[in-house]
Length: 263
Image (tube, rainbow, N blue to C red; front, side, top):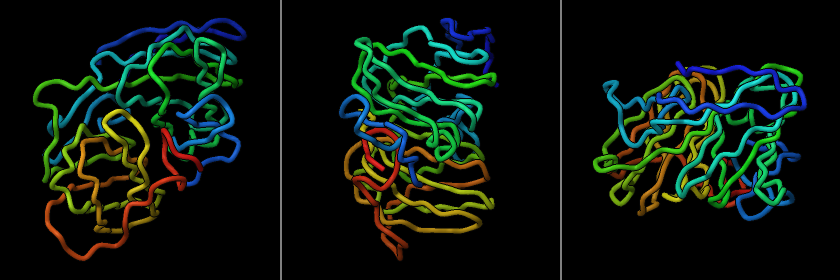
């Protein structure tokens, strides 16, 4: 479980602490290409751990996610976006808006409907640099900034399985031998799986569905990158190297996802 420090921040600056550890809403600005006006899509799990087949840690993790929390409207202290994948883990799922603002005052991401669409676990594709977040809500809230640190031995090679029951990411992954992704979802809620480059750029939605299903999805990426899953029911996602019958191809461009896609 994440540890949080709660502060009252109605119109004040929220305090930050560092701890070890679909369809987008049309009004949400999520662009990694520029400030407000261009929309884009917004594993290790949201609790900071990456579950693989067998329960072992797999891939890179963030040893010191930055956590902000408060009550009511607030502006956070600055945080620094490094090259690579950056995810905002936001609570609650509804009833708030989060604007990601650079040092010049430009809004790069405006998150409201997408918080629910991405099950509160939203990759943001913004340039490296210093940012603050403007929180608009009448509720208690928390935002955790997750930036996996890639070290020796963190590269994931197939076959590999991500098994979880909450939003999660997995990577960095060597996709050079990955031909398909097998998905087993046992819940009744929505599920989506998205692909990101090694630098955190949104590349496309691999698959989306809801309810209980099994799917074998063709995937031909070839480089290194990350997968991010938005789900709140039990699921398994397996990167496979064999060719077989598949259900769909990767959708890219502007049909969903976090980071640098529109929709």
